[in-house]
Length: 234
Image (cartoon, rainbow, N blue to C red; front, side, top):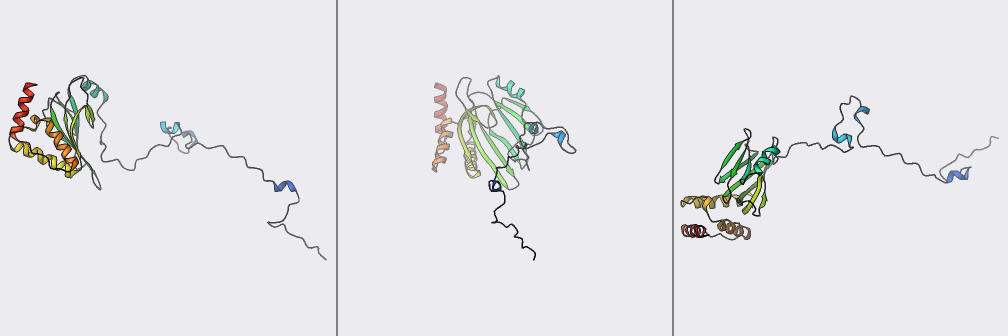
């Protein structure tokens, strides 16, 4: 008779007891995230990010709030920082990025290209700076800043697109609040007062009342004359 042979199964004990001990496998050395360009098929010159084994960033689409063109060169800002003026960078890409000045006494204007320019304002003057940006889905930025230009040596706050900065009298974000500020400016102009000459305390009052959800007091001629006399004395 043919001897019956037992096939080794899952629970069968091997002939060599050493096979029961599983030796840990030697881990393979880690591979770099990106190989050098000369190891690739049809490779070109290696980029800077690949040389450091850092993955490069791929933007599917540009953010609408970022300027489409190059920023202002550094030497332009370096020259601007040497004087006492406050410089505001304005960008206008219709229905995408729109920066404009609602009111202010412009001392100098520098045109960079067809979409960008720099406006300069002298010390101790007030201007209103509006920023609006949108993408394919709607508005992403809607903001207004009313800033007083500080003199050299005075403390100041940083404001986007304003160099070096200024004293922030009012800052509101969101179109409903921006519209209320613009309506307040229109009412001041309706009584024959230039918003540039308005008392800075009124813009602070308007800012605080809007933050607390209260109705601000209107700016009248009597308050304006009182401010002009106080400024003349001081």
